[in-house]
Every structure is written in structure tokens, then in C-alpha cells.
Length: 141
Image (tube, rainbow, N blue to C red):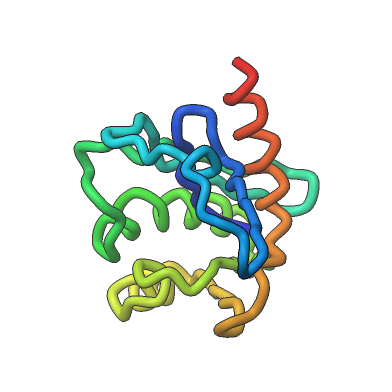
């Protein structure tokens, strides 16, 4: 079961980079404006093979994601997928809420087997392609 969360900001998700040579002067025209109070939301989703799993919009009033909230909101959804498909193992990154002792204990009690990415490795989670398509769609609409 591939899982991941992403942050979506008012339709923008690409970074713009400008390079200049060592001796080239600074040009303010090429510096992007940093906006305060951007509109955005956190989104979590999962899939296993061709099957889409549940998804969740992380509500702002829930605050930031920590281990107890992750267990309450997301591990519950993972459990729903895995309980009907006990052969699934769960792929997730090494975010603090994923690797916290509380989370690992909760997953263990629910017989969920997480598999973590090795530290400092590239993010090869195929759900990243889904996030890019979703963000492109949001940007267009």
C-alpha cells in the first residue's frame, strides 16, 4: 500500500530557478515575490496496485500532523485497507509522525507492517506522479 501526503498551495507547485554566472549582476526582476497568508491544504492518499484507497483532506483546525493525530485520522484509514487485504505492507516515508513510537505501536497493534524508505534516498513513491497530476488539475481550474 503506497501512502503519502502532499501540501497544495493555491494552484502553484513548481519551483522556478534562475541561474546566473559568477560575474553577472543581481537583477531583482528575476526574484519571485514571497506571498504571505497563502491558501493551501494538506492532502493524504493511498493506493495498492490498480486499487485506489481512501483519501483525506487534513483540516486546518486539526493543526499540524503529529503522531497522535496521524494515528487518529490516517492510521485508521490504513487499517481499513489492510484489514481487508492482510497481505499488504504499507510504504511510507520517514516523516516524524510516521516513525514515532506511538505510531509504530498503534500500527503494530493493528497488525500493520510499515516499510520505510531508507534515509537520504530519493523519493520513488509512485504516488508522487498522482500528486503532480492533481496539482496540475487544480492549477488549471
